[in-house]
Amino acid sequence: MRLDNFGLGLAKGMALTLKHVLARKPITTQYPEERLANSRRHRGPELIWVPTKCTGCATCATSCPQGNIEMITSVSTHNSWHVEKYEVDHGRCMFCGLCVEACPFDALYMGRGYERATNNRNQLVLSKEMLQMAPDRQPSGYFRPDVEADLPLQTLLVYGQRKEKET
Image (tube, rainbow, N blue to C red; front, side):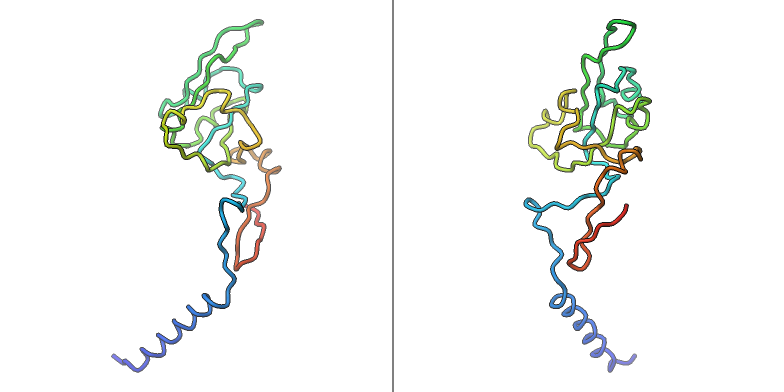
């Protein structure tokens, strides 16, 4: 075993480390003030329900492996269904997306948000008013290519430069 190359390898490693520390611009984002656009198909920990498309068939509730979706419907005029109660327990949901895939009327979407932390478990049970689309609750392109085309590109930081990447 030769020990004379040990010093050369150590010097090369330290040179590479110093090059990265001193020559590169930092790629850190100041998170609360500055946010990057996540992937178009990001399945955030939220569901978005569109009541105008929902017929109350409860296919989403039956497809949920955990039974987190509770739907109560009643018959309204002209043999159509009216959704009286629609609740999702996000505290127990594993966000597998089976309910989104099972919905035959595209009334349920995965969301793109990722800031759902809370200290109170009761706040994770969302009613139908809280599940509807809002400016801060936008649908994901997961399983919905028509929605994906309208979403912004993903922001990536590569060597301190902001680049848009098609995902």
